[in-house]
Amino acid sequence: MIQVRGLTKTISTGTHRVEILRGIDLDIPKGQVAAILGPSGSGKTTLLGLLAGLDSPTSGSILLDGEEIAGLPEDRMAELRGRKIGFVFQSYHLIPTLTAEENVLLPYELTGGGPDGASRARELLASVGLAERGEHYPVQLSGGEQQRVALARAFITRPPILFADEPTGNLDSENGSRILDLLFDMNRRGGSTLVLVTHDQELALRADRRITLRDGRVVADEP
Image (cartoon, rainbow, N blue to C red; front, top):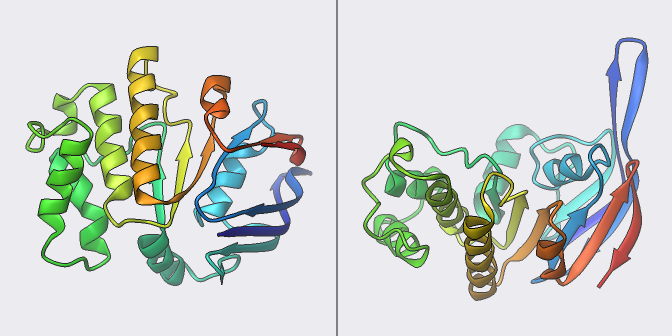
């Protein structure tokens, strides 16, 4: 489902060049749950952003479900993201002027989804325990509730690939545990390939595979 070859990312800061990723090779098969681990500055969030098409590599190849995305024009990349990718951010990224239901529905509408969008959004909100909160705005929701809305939003288009960046990083342990249970349950039922970045060893142990980065390189890849 995801194939990476020779992936590098370098940025220039005045007189210096910083190598963030230094030749990453990865294969992640369909349906696998892979956790990307590593200390701060190891390149894991940069790697996730490249896999999701949110940034462009300096060199190398990224295939998502057989489609090369490195160097893809932004309009084509946006169309591919709408069809194939769901993303759960650490900071929720809900639109404050939209209700919970409208936030969940937005990706579906942007990809030209059919007339069943509203009912699917309500169904997903119910599945994360927010059936009665659909008309509430983000400011009226707790952090845990906002992240549950973000989870529902990530699954609205039935994406074959799901990325999650520290999905419990802004939550207390109780809410974080609930979000993880929901994430893994919804992913199992949807059959998506899930790649997540985390510092949480407990979360990593729930994944099928643990990929550890250090200094921009893969230093461990374990089941």
